[in-house]
Image (tube, rainbow, N blue to C red; front, side, top):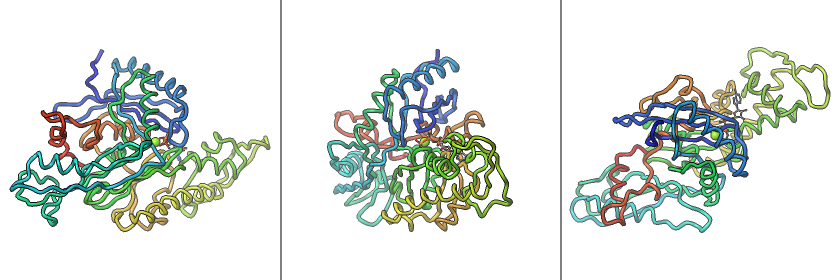
Amino acid sequence: MAGNHYLASIDIGTEKIALLVADKEDNGHLRIIGHNICSSEGVRKGSLYSIDSLSRVLTKLIEKTQKSFDLDLARVRVNISDTHLTCTDGKGKVSINEAVTLQDLDSVLESAMAMSTPTNKEKLHIIKKKFTIDESVVVDNPMDMEAEVLESKVHIVTVSSSSVRNIENCLKQSELEVEKIVLNPIAKSQAVLTQEEKNSGICLVDMGAGVTSYSVFHEEGIVRSGVIGIGGDEVTQEIADAFDTSLEEAKRLKEIYGSAKSSSLNEEKFIDFNQSTNKGEHQLSSLELSEVIEGAYRDIFVLLKNELKHHNLEGIIKSGFVLCGGASEINSIEELVRDFFSKRVKIGQIQRSRISGLETILTDYMYTGAIGLLLHEGDLSKSEFIMSSNGNGVIGKLKKAIVGNF
Ligand SMILES: Nc1ncnc2c1ncn2[C@@H]1O[C@H](COP(=O)(O)OP(=O)(O)OP(=O)(O)O)[C@@H](O)[C@H]1O
Ligand SMILES: [Mg+2]
C-alpha cells in the first residue's frame, strides 16, 4: 500500500465525479498516478442536495480507485460551486520603520484580510494581490525594500457555510478528510491559464452541466468570480422541448450532431431520432437542431455578459475568453463566443509545466477540474496558515505565499 503523502483531488460535478491522485516529486512537479470517473448523484446545479446519495457514489469511486492503483487515500482537495458567492478586495496599510520585514508583511496582510463576514458565510479564499510602497510603487514582494508606508490588497471569496459543511460531512461519510475546498473556476484557472494570460486580462469560463462559472484575472491578480445557475443541461432541455424527445435522446443529438453556431454549418443534414410521444421513425434537420442549441447557448452568454457588465469587467478582459468544461466541447463554440463578445477566445488546454500523466487524462475535459485542484496554491485562507513561532501570526505561511503565483 502506498502512503498518505500523495495529493488527491475530487471534482464533484452535476453530471460526473472525477478523482485524481498525484505523486509530488522533490522539485514540486506532480505526476498523476491514479484516476477514475463515475456519474454523479445528489448534486443539482453544482450544489449538493443529498449527502447520502453523493456519499454512496463517492465511497464506491474511492474504493475502486484505491484497489486499482494500490493507494490508500485519507485527505482530498475538493471543489465547490456556489451561486451566492461574494468577492471583495480587502485592503491593509501599515507604517514601516526603514525596510519591510516579515513582521510588516504579516501585519499588512492580517489587516487586509480582517473583513468580517455574515454568520451564514465564510471566507473560502484569501488570495494575495500586489503590494504598494509609499502609495506609488506596485510590487509582488516588498520584502527588505525601503519604505515609509506599505499597503496590501487581498481578494476574498466568501461562500455559504452550509455548502462547505455539507461537502465536509459528505466526504466524512466516505471516510475522507477535506484538505481544502476550492471554487470551481479558480481551480480550473490553475490548470489551463498561464501567468502571462492572467496578467493580460482574461476571463476563464467553465461550462458545466448544471452551472457556468467564471473567474476574471488581470495584472493585479484575480478580480472576480461568479457562478451562473445554468449550463449544458439547459441546452439539453431546450432540445428535448423543441423536438419532443427524452433528455437522454436530446443529449445524444447535442453531443453527436450539435453545433453552437448555425451559420457555421457547411451543409444541412437529416438526422434520425426518437420522439417521446410519437413512436416511429423521425428525422430532424441539423440546421434546426443547431438553431435551438445556439439559442440556448446565447441565453447562457447573455447572463454572463450582464454579470460582466454589472461588475465593470468587460474592459478588463483585453485578452478575451478561455473556455473549459463539458458544454464547451460543442462544435463551433469558439465562433459563437467570438461573435457574441467580440473578443478573442480559445478552448483551455492543460499547462504541462507542473504536471504530467497519461495523455488521455491531460486532454480529457472531465479531468480539468481535478487537475486544477491538484495544482492549486497561493491561497492565504485561514485553514492553510502555518502559525509563526509565537502562535498568532501567519508568517510561516507568508514565506510560501509571497512567492506563490496568483
Ligand atoms: N461534445 C459535447 N457537445 C456538447 N455538450 C457536451 C459535449 N460533451 C459533454 N457535453 C455537456 O457537458 C456537460 C457536462 O460537463 P461537465 O462534466 O463539465 O459538468 P459537471 O462538472 O458534471 O457539472 P457542473 O460543473 O455544472 O456541476 C453536459 O451538459 C454534457 O451534455
Ligand atoms: Mg464541473
